[in-house]
Structures are given as structure tokens and as C-alpha cells.
Image (cartoon, rainbow, N blue to C red; front, side, top):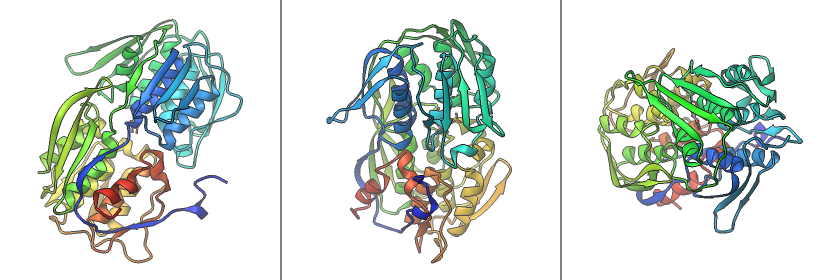
Amino acid sequence: MSSHDPAQTRPRRFTAAGPLTGRIRVPGDKSISHRSIMLGALAVGRTRVTGLLEGEDVLSTAAAMRAMGAEIERLDSGEWVIDGVGVGSLLQPQTALDMGNSGTSTRLLMGLVASHPITATFVGDASLSKRPMGRVIEPLSRMGADFTAAPGGRLPLTLRGLSPAVPIEYRLPVASAQVKSAILLAGLNTPGVTTVIEPVPTRDHSERMLKGFGAKLEVDVEADGTRIIRVTGEAELKPQVIDVPGDPSSAAFFVVAALLVPGSDLVIENVGLNPTRAALFDVLRQMGGHIEEVDRRDVGGEPVADLRVRASALTGIAVDPAVVPSMVDEFPVLFVAAALAQGRTVTTGLEELRVKESDRIAVMRAALELAGARVTETEDGLIIDGTGGDPLPGTAQGAAVATHLDHRIAMSMAVAGLASQAGVEVDDTRPIATSFPVFEHLLAAATGTA
Ligand code: S3P
């Protein structure tokens, strides 16, 4: 039976609690954790990783890399050690690769397999099986890989890789770090120069980490901001010691909760602040949020700081669509902040949100409405008229927000529950474990209800 059998959902009502205070530390960055395991598995020798996110998505990546020959182990100290097979030496997996809920695992691993002489079948849960894979199938087919996918380019999908693959120059038609990364990873085992042209910058963890592992990778930035990324294959990767910074996308839920719950004064330690990820914090500051960076430093080649967040009166704004890629996962929780702000918040340019773990525009509209917020859905965003700081009414008895197997909907509406009169009932909290297994524990600790 699937772990997401509807008969086994784990509903919970999140209710107003005390202010959020003290110091917390959120788990490691999900994007960086996936990449640490993948590149560690492709290096020759032993990579060591501390601070790895031990969420279901990252564990799916680890299981897949084991199935293709890498040795991956968690030590009692919490450190992970990865003995890689070397670029070009991935083994044929003996069974289908179960990607669970994880789009990042699926798309990046498709890139890896595409330039190896192996065949792999990818399967996933109901949410992942609805998500479009055509965006990676298209460029990887140009490199020579062959695909059989479910209708609409979806999972389950079988990929036959080609070695040697053909290097391509590819201009990204959608702003997607997953598509960019899939092509760059395929390029590692492809003789010659594989080029990705990125008109709108997206998270650059793959580029940073590939350089760290010793790949020949160059990035040129044109006058209009277009990035041209070239990787030369066949690469030889050297094992690394990696310290994964805290995930800004996980910190986001606590930042918004502390802004909304009166009396809060919370420090979130060790938050990754890569500029291609951190736009939410700037947007919240524009809305009047008190978010202070303390002790800015470098961890694992990424900028990091502790964030001190104090309860604040927020004002609605029009969010600049140019920032969307650098906070693409943070809109659900921004919508919650907007629902409590003074005045109107308008978001545009969010088409990509419709193909995340759920259709985050439609699902958040329905969820916030059920909690009593005033929300209008447009084709590419939401318009939200805030309460001016008053708590939301909350969901009625017997009415639960539908999360559609989407961890970020569950956590965003948990935050809404903290800022509500009657609380917010969430239909299923299990998906939270994909990215933030200790979320409920940290929430109890920060609100003094542990
Ligand atoms: C990710 C890229 C983003 C993001 C996802 C993680 C990554 O997806 O939404 O959670 O690690 O590369 P897209 O590339 O589809 O925008």
C-alpha cells in the first residue's frame, strides 16, 4: 500500500499558540542536499556531508544513487559518507527508481542517466505523476536519450541513455533550475561542451557545486542578465567535504509565523541566503517585516546568516514578477502573510506555480478562502485583501484544507492556523516529511507548547 493511501491521512488542526521565541535551526537545504548526494556519487572517492536534509525527497535520491552503484551511508554522528563510482560508471538499476514526491530527484537523475549506457524506469506518487517531464525529455532527447513516457510526458517513464551523448546548446524556454541542472548533469559524461542559456537566472547551486567538485564549468553573464553556462565533458569529479546550510524555504514558514504572531521575537540560525533563493525576505521587508541578518558568513560555498524576526504590522504590495524565480517555492507562505497584511497584495507571473507538487495558485486560493481570507485568483497569480493584522476566522468544524500531497501547502496553512481565531484544519500533514520532517516539533518548541 502506498504511504499516501487516503485511508491513512494524518489530519491536524493548527491553532493560535504563544509568540514564537528563542532560537531554532532548520534542517539542511533540500536543493543542496540532492546535489551533494548526486555529485558525491559521481566523484571518485569519498565525499563527506554534514547538515544533509534527511527528508523523504533526499532519501529518494540516495536510494536511486545506491541502485546505480554508489555506496551511501549515514554515520551515527549524523554525517553522511558517499563513495562515488565516477562519471561514466553508473550501473544499470535492477528495479524501477521510486522518486516518491520529488520532482528535483526525477528531473536531475534523468539528466544523469541520459548520458550513461543504461536504462532506468522512474515512478512516483500521485502528485509527481501529474507533473510535466516534457521540459527535460525535450533537451535530453536532443542529446540522444530515448524516452517512453505516460501520456503528456509524465511518469511512469523509461529512459534509455546514450553514451557517448551529443553535446547541445540549449536556451531554457521556462525559468527552471531543474531543467538547467538536468542538462548540465547530462553534460558531465558527454564529450565536448554542453551549453545552457538561461535568460532569467534561477538557483545556481548546481553551478557552484560542480565547480567545487572540480568540473570545468564557466558562466558568462551578458549585459541583459542572460547567463551562459558551459560544462565540459567528460568530467572527472574530486570528492568534497560539504556542510549544507539551513534551507531558506523551510525557514520561510518560521519567518512568516514570527512576523504574524504578536509578541514574537525569534532567531533562526544558519539560514542559506544565496541571492537566487532569498527574495522572500526582501519582499517581506518591503511589506514592513522586521527581519535582521546577524553574522553573515559563508557555509559550504553559500552565503548564510542567522535571521532575527520580530512580530510586525505588514502592508500589502504589488510583488515584482522579476523576483519570482528567486522565491518560487515561497509564494504559498507569502500568500498567508498577505492575508494578514493591511491592504491589497498583488502577485503576477506565477504560471510555474500551477505545475509544482500541486497547482499552488488554485490550491492556496481554496485553502485561504476556507480559512476566511479574501482572495481572487487570476491566470498567473493571486490578489489578496488582507485583514490589517486581525486574525483570520479559521476553518469551520468539519471543514479541512485540501493539501493535495503538497508539503508547502500543509506548512503554509499551519502558519495560517497560528494567526487565526478558530484554528485551521489541514487534511493531511504527512507530506511535510518530504522536505521538513521536524517542522511540527520545531513549531511546538518555538511556541512553547512542546
Ligand atoms: C529546485 C528547483 C525549483 C524548485 C524546487 C527545487 C531545484 O523547481 O521549485 O523545489 O532544486 O533545482 P523548478 O526548476 O521546476 O522551478
